[in-house]
Image (cartoon, rainbow, N blue to C red; front, side):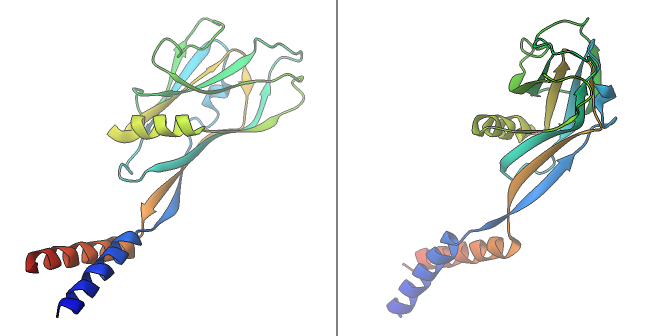
Length: 195
């Protein structure tokens, strides 16, 4: 009988150790999709509800489709700033920043994701993808832990575009894994109770 109990205990540990998950992809788009064509005199927040609190975020990227600078000359001060925000109202909000140069969100608690400068003329559009670094993924998990996070976007130039999208990859435990985990836990509890 002791051999069977020991076998049950080992089996329980193996089941618990076999926890696996699968990746889920979540996509978000603002409304309007082009964030009002990212006008120079404005800064924008985009608040997002994150209803998947128990799923750890493993990667994320921000995509701008067919983005281009309205000016037909190179200007290294024409910078697009992208930041993570802790507190942003759900949806898109636009703020007048008076054509100021620099990141509007830097002194408002924004965590810089990346910047971009269009150094060619306005005849060329680009599809941009900004991958979140490991540090920004950690920040995103932290900010999203209360079910809400935001993005701050500040264009120091007018940037036409055909749409912005945020893609988040997260790990979700498989239902059978959860069942096996539960059975393993029950098995261990029964083993401990008998011994």
